[in-house]
Image (cartoon, rainbow over all chains, first blue to last red; front, side):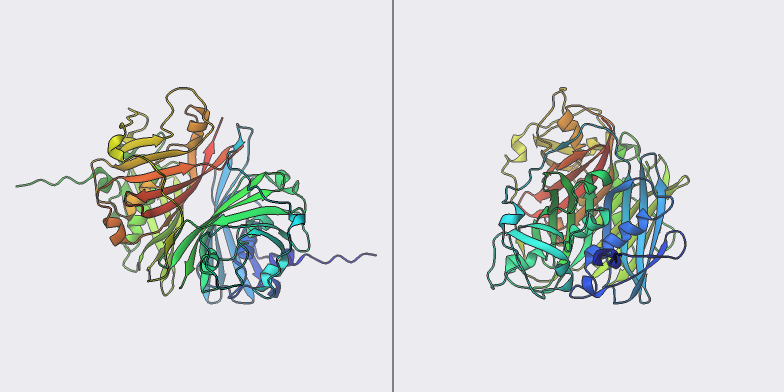
Length: 270
Length: 270
């Protein structure tokens, strides 16, 4: 006899059906951030809600999630709506709300991939394999980080108050315990970076993602082929401008498949 | 006695008020694309509609526009709604619709900039001044392009059927006739690039933006300081994957101010 325990990630994005496109979820302590849950897990729950909609066609192509207010611990409602279905793609809107009002809005594009000329123009960063890098443990920074094995290649969480001239962080990362990669997990990984301003300033300060956009470059089969292996995640900022900075990121499979590119704008106070 | 004629761009984004947050606009032949209007002008009209809302605070920080269906020639309705107002930022949703249904959805973040440590980490491409570059005229490619003076530094519209190994296009560009830069104009400029797949494949083929995200890095005063000067716009793709490719772009002032960074996912058929 075997007992199966759900992965903490699946628990965190588990949804109750309240009618077509209407769901209730619950925050979990495992995915807590400084204030409210990890933004990546909220984004993942939205992807999961769309995936479960009976009218959904195709797989994620683009997702934009706007963080309006911190999700407070407890229940939250997700409503997803297909606004338009075209021949090969479908446009969605989503809203997460709690008793105190809307906390998160999102738009998504799902689509069907067809045979077409294809090419990866970006180059995977030249880095040592994950097995050769010391595991960077940052005990207690925030709970959600404990759900990932993170092997920093460059730009680890600053522990000394020393400024950096580069905002680039590159790390090998996978879910902990290991879990096969799917779109919900890839969505969460696109928000796996601590705020770039910490690295530049050499210290923690108030910062939070305002809007996150992720573009998916693979289908579900290509994603599943990554199995439970590490992915290489790299991110940097282009400009820090009086309270807002941008971040642009790539998520690569170990086999040099560019799985996703992702962008966000982040509030900071310094 | 002088006669003032509105700039074609202002005509293209001119809106009639139909109550708070409700507007009607009209497509104009000057901003026509292959099918429907130039996506940049639709995005600009959404920004303008939010700017006109009496509850609006601050200036654009982030904008995501999803192109669901071509806008057909004629009237279109824009509805913008402030979903949440925080202390220093405000989250919006927007929808453009016509008789045949919704054509465009959008989310936006407006915000107030405060004094804070700031830095531009990206570097402006090293290129010759716009006055030293031949004006690349592509007669008749699409009407909207005639509203811009475009001086290509790299990656001009391919005229020979020759593939390129790089998807990078860099150009000096300004509105034609010259017009002082504002957020609506900067929004439109973030979509000023012809599809990257044309450059890689050395020919035109079916392609269209599905979702466009722009992050703004300046306030209105910094933007107005650019006057009517050229901006340097550069864009490249990271991956072309079976029907969808991404594009990431920067818009620089001539004084090396990074005005905006922008990203899009584009449908193509090849």
